[in-house]
Length: 593
Image (cartoon, rainbow, N blue to C red; front, top):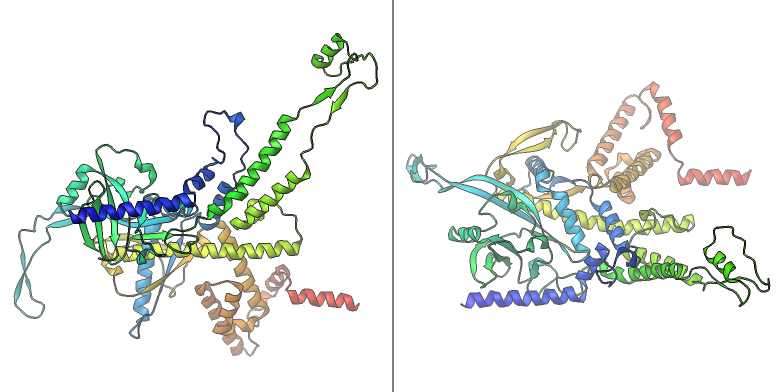
């Protein structure tokens, strides 16, 4: 069969291409380093014989994951204009509907969204990360399918015979699934994006009965049955031999724009369907010069990790090897005194035949200061290559305040760039979930939405309400853009956003005229790094209202409206840190005196 030999050959070539890449970048070794297996020692050795290992690979990845994603993220959906017929009011309603749907889906504990996303990000340190937005459903036969009904025509009184669907959806779900990178393949001639490759896909296992039952019904094996087992991740831990199972491939062919289900044993295509959008979302840190497969970040950490382990093990061996030893000339100690010296209690008196030269301790070989300096240098090199500061590890660095500030600023720049990559990965998953839900879901579902009756996009806290959403309303033709509320992802990000907000408010307090201009207030916010448009718009509206109230009373803009607010204002000014100009003026006044 030409089709069978065709896909068998292509999958074999893709496997060879993947194995070459994994061997070149030592992907299995990178995972072993994360697990702490960083020495080539026999497994039969006991704990006492294990070499010293200071696993900075593990601690660094844990630190980075804690900065990127700890809590379940909240997705903000905003309308996006695409043409001149854009209707803002309808687009806002559409965006609110999509925001309620995607956050309800992400925050559902059964979907385990943070768990799968965090595992995919962790995979990207050794290989790459893959998340699938999957759909599964169970169907029942429609008892009214054999009895078509007459319905009045839309353009006239003529009646039309309307048929009923043979199958009805009984239960369905949209969920997230982490795909192990060990199972994922791209075409032998790969490009830097999935869309540019000839094809891509991954292999999975299914029970024979389920597989051939889906084949007989001409259904996709992934959507032919709805069960909790269908939600499990396609990981290497599921590669254990499943009784009475078959191995098959899910392939997305970009040339024919078809999704294929291919049996691994013979390469035969058992199912195919057209697709417009792939359900797979990938994440890679560093792209290689050519090809799809990336350069794993941990690959650059191996030399520094080995140097740290070697230095620690050398110091450990030196401490264990050199124990206290003594030299004594012959005929200085009698046999009785020698036994007393070797086995006597603490504080024993030893009688010497002669005191010159007596018992002299043998000096141990000095390890040297180079070993200690090498350890410090290796740790600094590891922090540089991994982009992790000493403060992030909870260790004080011996540097001046200016050097520490410069290093901290540069580290923040790199961490901010990494956080943006993570947020972009999350928004791509969320966008795919919204579009897939509008296309495939058919049953109404309950969503949790914030109360937005007061203003267009103002969140008023915990006053949330539940509404019934028709999934067809998600496919309304309105485009949208997604923003991750970074303060919801981790405490570290929340602390960063708090500092930006305090600096932004302090700047507006010192220069109130900035809040009166939409251009100036946004320029100020963007220079500081604060980009919450809802809050910026609300601050500007409050400033304009204050200006109009001051003008109505004949006072200057920004003047206090209530006579009783003087004391709180003085308290606020006392707690506000001085600006750089205030500090310079104070220093100049002291010099003049």
